[in-house]
Image 1 (cartoon, rainbow, N blue to C red):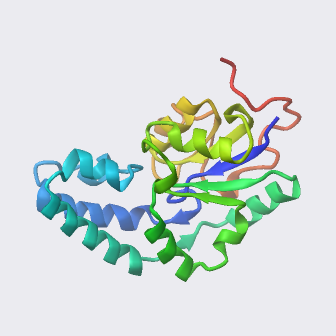
Image 2 (cartoon, rainbow, N blue to C red):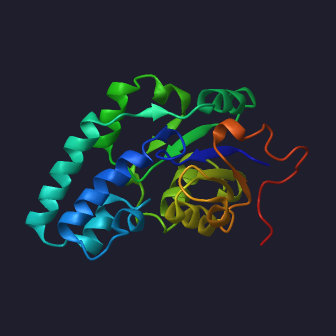
Length: 216
């Protein structure tokens, strides 16, 4: 039975992906003009993973990080339609909810300034500092499930990015894919169920289902 619901943040709870794409496109044009899909390639990655792959020069990374922090301090953090309603249904059903994000605590502080009541919708918020290896490794979801007192197969994960979906699938959780960032043909490859957003998610997701775990 489902015991815990785990939610990615960007592209699932808050509508920021278009803004991030523009930011990372500008970074890519500066440092990797030979990679026109640079912004796409880093979606769903923690900053530490982006640094390890693309910005090993400390001076360059420090500049990128400073630009990112300035950007995140002023960007818009709009909550997707239907988020509060769906989370309310989960809470009514007695199912704890947690955010599991690749974002760091400093970005979450910027989010809290714009959306001071958002954290009230969740029982826990897990950030990049809690994750271990970043997505697409499953560490963040495995650690979150353990911290929430549930087996990962008793968890439903809501994700939108390819790396996030891979992390959720590899973890062994029940995966709900949202097509807020990628087409359904891509998302459905990694998800058990696919919806356009939380506003489309019915409750319960699987009527009369006795188990949320995928067959192994």
